[in-house]
Length: 212
Ligand code: VGL
Ligand code: ZN
Image (cartoon, rainbow, N blue to C red; front, side, top):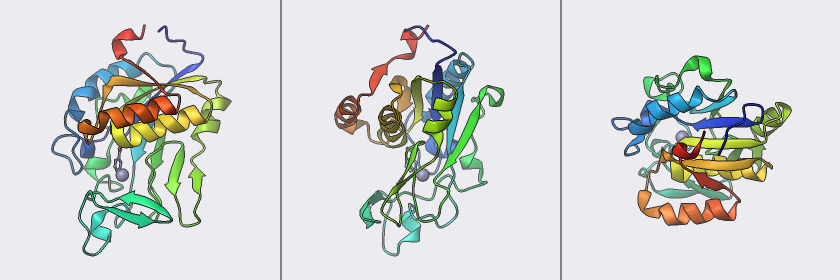
């Protein structure tokens, strides 16, 4: 596939130390994709980096719910919320963007999950909030205002924020690819389920070696 600067954007999802080995919510192999994503970013004229950026005591943290453990699920705002170890706390080292992501190549850094009572896996639309709706982050309109028609999604984690971001990009009318070799999953054993959801949502998959 031939990249076209005018209409293509790279979306780098949550490339942050807390999602890498040694981090608070470590994703196996997360560190292996940082340098190649950094190199790929230099080839795009439009690069959006999402940054998970939670206040202390965030509703997605198991530590915020008495008696709950990480990776349990609770009912929240009429939906289901997985509980996580404390991660990507605003201003903490684990919440920084990975240094292999060249700052000068980033067009937009979009912080998400910033509201204490609402999580956001997707860079486009938050998870369900207290009013029962999902709030837009504005990213779809931002991309459309720049004439972006196609987006390529990389980063962490494939089964949560990459999946949600790609599905919402496709739902926003963008032609959407997940660049498979530049993602890693929290639970790789569920890959078939994630792949089916992506296909169902109209998201295509590609390897970085196919981009020219
Ligand atoms: C993510 C769980 C909690 C992700 C973020 O980036 O996939 N997963 N917060
Ligand atoms: Zn998070």
